[in-house]
Image 1 (tube, rainbow, N blue to C red):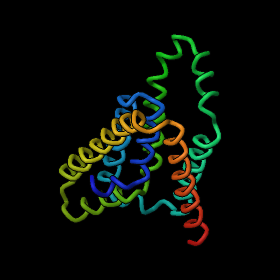
Image 2 (image 1 turned 90 degrees about the horizontal axis):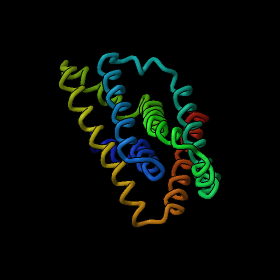
Image 3 (image 1 turned 90 degrees about the vertical axis):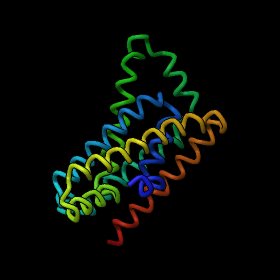
Length: 185
């Protein structure tokens, strides 16, 4: 599961989110989403196969294209100006906003993802749902830590503008790829 998730879109999303939010918030939100998704995969088994692929892929494409637009079109200076206008009370609530955002992005992106499908397969083959759930969840939590803290380290070595540009282009590419997949399916 860990190896399957390394090159995945959710790993990239975790890295990008960590450049604009606290790594701890991203880890908590993303890890929670991964654990819930693995629980759904194990408990529901084949439920994911009932979702129309086009609907699922269209939602994922829209999220990627929205993320790309945000990263490529919203300037850092406008974000910083908005951030300066926030009051202390709102900043305290921003940790929850970061956690909820990370949870939502990862939760939606993981629906029908390769790792979730693999958890369904492992459960079906081994008939050991608890073991699959624990092992899969631990692997995904490790990915959350790697992506969030790796993104923080990356930001120290690479200018934020470059990270946003690359992240936006990756998201745009994934969104366009998904749209093409939906259109040709």
